[in-house]
Amino acid sequence: MASVQDLKRRVRSITNTRKLTRAMELVASARLRRAQTRIEAMRPYADRMLELMAGVSQAAGAVRLPLLERREQVQTIALVPVTADRGLAGAFNAQVLRRAFALQRQAEADGQKVLWFSSGKKASSTLRFRRLDVAEGWTGFSERPAYRDAQMMAHALADAYVQGQVDRVTIVYNAFVSPLVQRVTVRDVLPVPQDLLERSESEDENEPAEFAHPDFIYEPEPEEILARLLPVYLETELYRALLESGASEQGARMTAMRNASKAAGELIDSLTLAMNRARQAAITQEILEVVAGADALSG
Image (cartoon, rainbow, N blue to C red; front, side, top):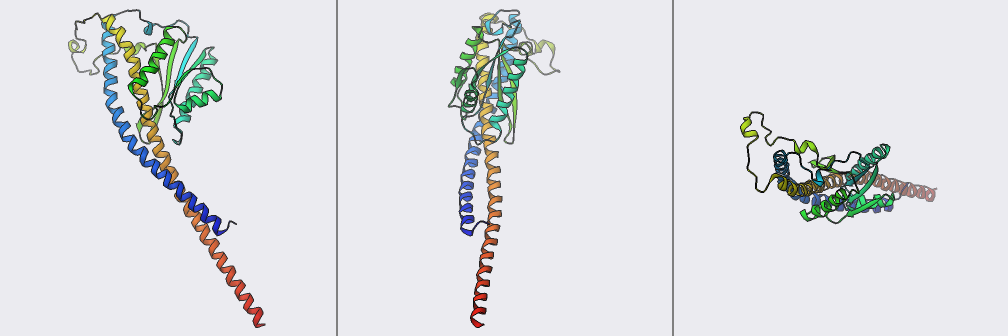
């Protein structure tokens, strides 16, 4: 049985740990509010971008652009897991990597090669530990990504696709649902999905047909506008994924630190109870020794 001093040291250590986890929970909560504001402001812009690209694509008709080219045989797939630069966020990083490795096994079973592009130190270190083929990795902006970070990633992925190094680009990230829920999302960004180009600009079924597909006059030509929009679409989708992942990271870390603080409190209570029992046992033993000594002297 542990001594009273040992139990005191353990209680003191766990109390200090709980202070740390509570502080990290508060920091993550404050950062979550900012990240949630950014992603909520970004979502309407991204949705409007898809509608604009769909309208221009319908006006342009059949065009041949590098980012729209679909290879008859997909031989190489680029997987882009979006993780955090730090841990202490529960299963946030593990569930993204788990899904990415499942996609890798599926692709290899179909006879396809996987080329990795990583975002976040956790993905980079895991892929390097497994000695996988990593073309490029980006770190340092998981908690507060900027649009230029998405541009940097988009340029590298677009170049790899246009040059024929990869035939499809798939990103895997945590979509933010709520501070308690982060949904692992898999999305193909290159080639641009055909269903996005064919979607209607109006999602209101009650809107008259003449307003659902208005006749616009484009300047310059729709083909040229679409060629400019496609790289912006890729940057926007990656930026949206980075923002979703950043908000999800703070939500997961806040929840993990809250659970850790709760577990530390329960452990402190159990150790305090054990410490009181040990102290009571020591006092009882001292009383028995005093009584035994008194009996020996009186006898």
